[in-house]
Image (cartoon, rainbow, N blue to C red):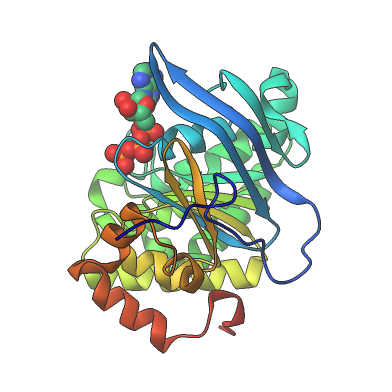
Length: 284
Ligand SMILES: Nc1ncnc2c1ncn2[C@@H]1O[C@H](COP(=O)(O)OP(=O)(O)OP(=O)(O)O)[C@@H](O)[C@H]1O
């Protein structure tokens, strides 16, 4: 089938339907290069307040590197990554720390400190601030544990003594410790069986609604993707080739989109999408 030639290098570029003000994250003209390998070229991406923006793309298209650049852990070769209006690569150490206090990150493996209890893991970002009395931290940790559905009986356990689902919940509680406006999720449901995965997705959705979070997620899992995303950004050919609500991205004619979404494994997830209202219409 002959591809329709796009007018720009983006096949679909749909901002959120509502007027959501300035982007929380604005990436412009990004170039990422490792040695001779160019990973991103002329990449633009805007992420707006309150949305759940999912980044998908084939293996090696630079999804994780893009997340790391938003977190200020890697600097692009060219272009700008602005978070909360500030250019990350120009931020000094103090400024970067201040910005980090406004976002939370859930790493793929949970990334808990194995030598610390669950309680101390969740308390750690608050203790690093060196400004909060221990009683306040204690109450906040217990509140976060309650928010993520982790009973206080787990507070003194070591991460190794928790199940996979509980590690995810504890990591999420830690990511929420400083009450961030922006939450980054890297493969949030990886390694969970379908029931635990569904429960974790429901938890993320309810926290997103309750806390008004902006969420940036990388996931390969189509169920998670369709259950949560307000918009999906597709990385291919070194840039974002399509960005918009799931239903619109699915209609874009591109070999990666067809293979990723419309293959056999996409069918069950698509049925879920048909059964639910668009992410920004959900009430729970
Ligand atoms: N620090 C680094 N040094 C050299 N090459 C790197 C570095 N970090 C990433 N790369 C390369 O950049 C490319 C993009 O990597 P990245 O991990 O972001 O891909 P990805 O889209 O997240 O892939 P996957 O879906 O397989 O996790 C890969 O080719 C990777 O080998």
